[in-house]
Length: 238
Image (tube, rainbow, N blue to C red; front, side):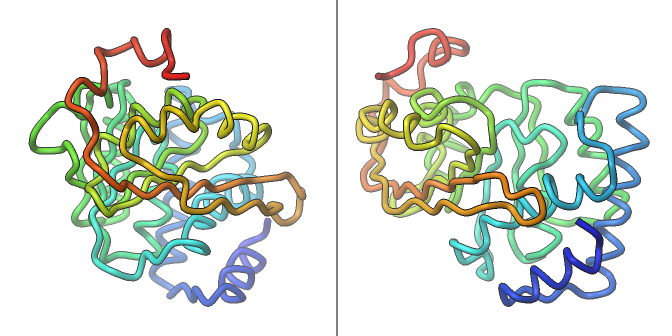
């Protein structure tokens, strides 16, 4: 995806980027590639692929959820900052917290935020299972996002405890999304959520399938969840 395609396709969806925002995306790409030489952040480094599979793909969440309000967003296992940093560039008013278990990624993201001159961004070196039991973060976020982190039955236990009642968990998925949701519905319900909607579409240019599940937090998560670090992955709520 060339930069002019990137801007044109976002404009078609009603999202117009300023010159400053486009400069931020360019700086993001350059910083990502530079740091990727020192640490493994992404297997995708070709510029057109980064713009398509990381930047555009991250922003697709905004085609289905309104990020124009000043919301608090928590991104679980964001890796090199996806989807939350592209969303933050596109919607500067949102407040972003990223939690990741690898400190080297947090080091990269802290540097990236300085390069891009982002405000209202916070980076936490922690496990989502720990954060979900912390009163400062438990049920404190309007939106929690996760992109290709784990299957739904596991992901729900990592993310839903962080969502405020009335808020949303956006799970961004590629292949086998519907099968994952079928297997994970019990976990979603048990943790206080309800599948409000799902959106399946094809990513432009390469035509690969994507699905976004919009899960509304309808009631508080029972206190015994999330379980200890590592347990959700080993014993999913299925």
